[in-house]
Image (cartoon, rainbow, N blue to C red; front, side):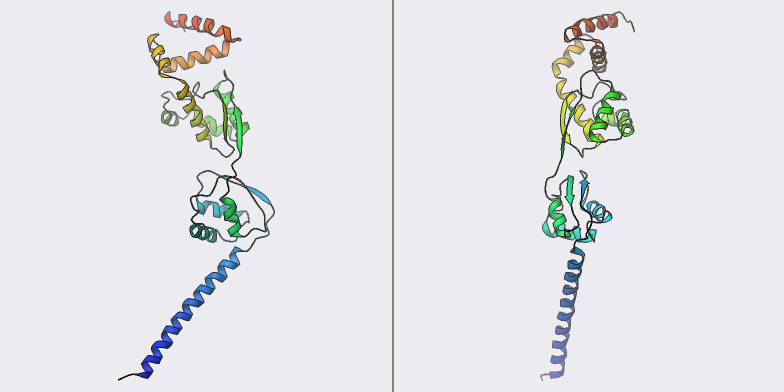
Amino acid sequence: MFDLKKSVKKEWFLVGGMLVVLWCVVGILGAAWWLNRPTGATEQIVAIEPGMTVPQIGHHLYTVGLIRSPHLLRFFARLNGTGRRLMAGPHPFHGNMTTWQVLRELERPREQLVDITVPEGLRMSQTVKILANKLDMEVEVLLDLVQDTEFCKSLGVSVGNLEGYMFPETYRVSAATTEKKMLTTMVEHFWGAFAPRFRSRAKQIGLSLHDVVILASIVEGEAQLDTERSTVAAVYHNRLKKKMR
């Protein structure tokens, strides 16, 4: 027998459930709208470092007052599928941007490139100073790295420092590059330039790879003219053959 009371009760239960869900959706949308509003912060450029995650970026932008909620930025990034497409570099922001507009700015490539020329014949400490000045790096951090035995080994350098392995060249790199990345690039250029035929020649004259690097550094430091290099090299090679210091 049809029970009218139970049917009405069931319908009211369904209606109530739908109202609760609707109320939650309205509440979420309202909160999103409220948190998405511009903050009114001053115009500024924020440097996003390579490797920063969306939570880290969101926290940083929240700290400098450009967004109202780092959680909303993460939600938008997932919604838009851009979590892995946020670009490193100096991004311009202003206080009239919504969180959604901030996210769209983060998707644009804004990487600033810097040309760094490392001349031949420099000592390790001199090269470090050039890198620090051009890339706004800490000299102490660079000095620690170039003398870090484990870091040197990771780059294929068996001795305890990178003296002679930081290849002199003009590099075009991101202004936001890290100390490790810059040093890695320079050593990779060294290995690329040190062709197998040079290794073979070093073995023929009884020198290790490190001996050749040190000898080349000495020659570069003492030769005033390009034509003098072979003469200076011959002098030192003869001294080595005679077991002189």
